[in-house]
Image (cartoon, rainbow, N blue to C red; front, side, top):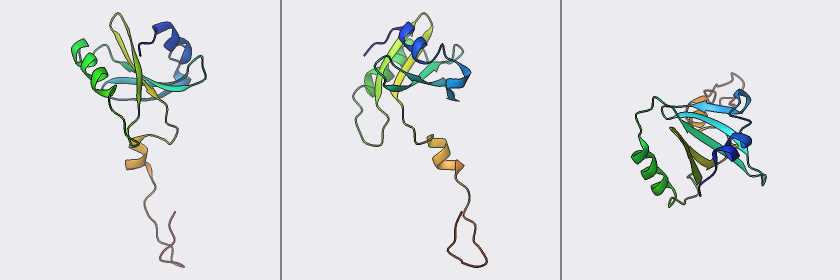
Length: 117
């Protein structure tokens, strides 16, 4: 589905810092809410990103067919001038990075060797 830039701009409160979820090699990711109430994550390509429009188009095409319980679903995209934006469903269970690296290490208590934090 193709989204208008103004719809994504409105949903993310004009890509406000308060809605910034994170940043990666591709660009910034913003939380947003569409007019119908659906929460989204808008992934905005950095201008200096080496990924061009053909790679962006290929990613949109491939991800539009991806359906699996462990894959965040691509809802659509938005293109305006040099801004390429991928629109994903918003998942509120923290990031993959947090699940891989953010948990506290297991600490054993002197009272109980099976106690963990």
